[in-house]
Amino acid sequence: MKRLLLIATCLFISLPALAQSKILYEEFPSSKLDETRRLKIQLPRDYDENTEKVYPIIIVLDANYLFEPVAGNVDYFSYWEDMPESIVVGIMQGDSRYDDGAYDDVNFMPEEKGADFFEFIGLELLPYIDSTYRTAQFTIAVGHDFTANFINYYLFKEPPLFNGYINLSPDLAPMMAERIPQRIPSIEKKTFYYLATGTDDIPDLRQITLELDTALKPLKNDTFDYYFDDFEGATHYSLVARAIPSALEKMFSVYRPISKQEFTEKLLKMDTPISDYLTEKYKVIEDLFGLTNPIRVNDYIATATAAEKKKQYESLRTIASMAQKQYPDTVLGDYYMGLALEGLGEPKKAMRTYQGAFDKEEVDFITIDLMLEKADKIKEDFGY
Image 1 (cartoon, one colour):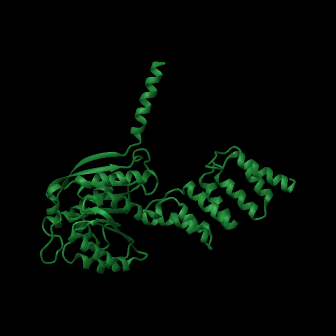
Image 2 (tube, rainbow, N blue to C red):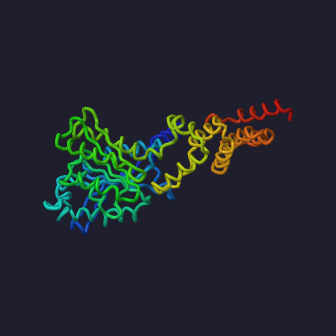
Image 3 (spheres, rainbow, N blue to C red):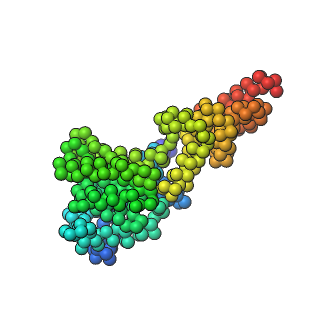
């Protein structure tokens, strides 16, 4: 008995550990910098088990203090499926951040060590991460004040190196506040841009951030997703803890499961087929983030419920058919197929569909008893 208890205790202790994200430290020799740089890397919880899965990359500058808040929020948001699991790569900089971000006094673009650091990230670090880990073709850069300015230089590559830019109280180089709004309209690929300040931020940085916000707001369009936060009472340093989750939530809003608000304000107001909304949502996820995710049960239920309420029975049948193919061992698709057939005036087929799912796995509120009740009700009403 004691031995069984010991084994059970060991399993109980080890299981949570298996579910944790993995932190790695690497020494990266850079020929561009002519020195070795220390990296801190967080791999997703299921990285070792799910060997076919690929992950977006989040590059964090100032990783000496920014890595933990970014990595912690990424792990938390991805755990609840509010963003895709991602590989977080932190570049430890410390006092070298000023040399890394050095720019010319005339054209205010990277020079000397700053130019080397620019090439280190683009020509050495990202190719190394892509070749060493399973990555999706979606990358975000995160920086604070001096390093927030630096990540903007990648906007001027053709095409820009990153898909997303998280600028935390940027200490912008001269002319940068004018150059960014001039550059944005000529960028063809989808770009996500987040900017944050606080009411108690360093006055000069706050002022230039507000001016940049004013210039960027009119530019928001189908290819440029722009987000801005001005946190009440936040200082130059405290705003970081509030801005990072806000930035991730905004940038990955399309990735999240369909919410109650989305259900009410979008699905229930649609005149076009709701099944199209479901397929388009996951097509956008694939196009933006390079991820071919299975459609969530939650999203099947949300769109099917909306289609039923809107009496879009053909659309409901399409959703049900998709669910049957993706989750064939569950009652999910059969339940909504039965509802669709009832709505389309085919009660006998609906009854048989309900009855045929008696040995399948239950999902959410859809139980075997519910399925059999639906079948019995049709039998009673139509005398089958």
